Length: 159
Image (spheres, rainbow, N blue to C red):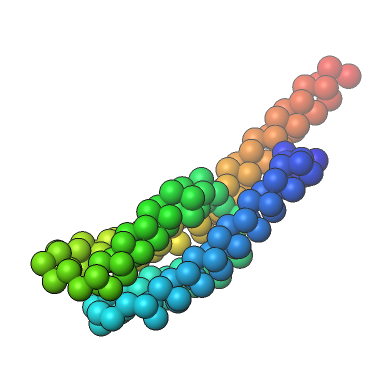
């Protein structure tokens, strides 16, 4: 056990990280394919921005081992929801329902902006969590050293 972590913890974290990397690749692939089925420039631009941010997030999560809860929620709850919205939009666009299309287009464009903002927030959290963890470890190490020194002083004065 090093730094208070066990092999089991590290293995679990590596598994989660691998899962997140696979989920990122899967969603990048999905949105690239979906973009090709969309005929609206505004939505296509929104998906391009989302793809750029997803690639940045994928690259960033490779380097950091933090933010697991945020990434779990993002990949397992939020992106499937966006996936459903995009699929419904593609179906609606193909149906030529001109009455509903502008309203749904506006909602999808806004959802794409919100998801891009969400990714930006997650990308800020990953290094901050890592820094916080390193700071907490440094404080714990310093406290342990102080206790060890106090213990040694107590035993030296007893002799």
